[in-house]
Length: 148
Image (cartoon, rainbow, N blue to C red; front, side):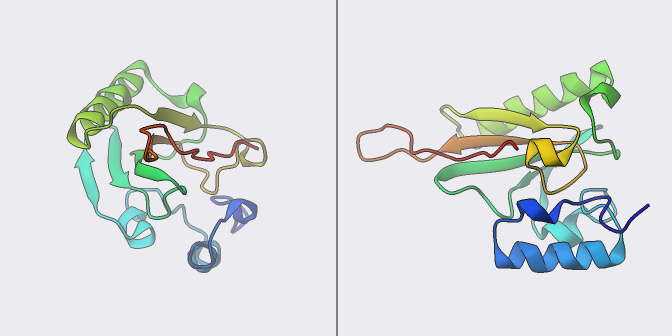
């Protein structure tokens, strides 16, 4: 297993993120596995269920009023690995977060599989719950969530 098996540094968006990814690569660990999550992510777990942890994004996308991560408790990289109860638990946690953060509208995005195709930096199944900021007219500002 190569040291970069858990991350794809080609999708890094900030200098600070790059520094942390270098450290993760050096240690050869998954930054989203439970034993490493708070250490590398730097944000506390807001809510935890049997199968998922909810955190605020350390590097939120530009124009996101809310950007939350739902991180699978066990290491997996593809949706084919999810059991039905894990899907249900993720959706219930997303609903809880939407209520707690008063998300009026947004997106729930789940990248999976080959990070060269998905745009993900971390090879550990996780979803993004994102609400865009509104402009002065109440229209959403564009949040660029890259895929690819």
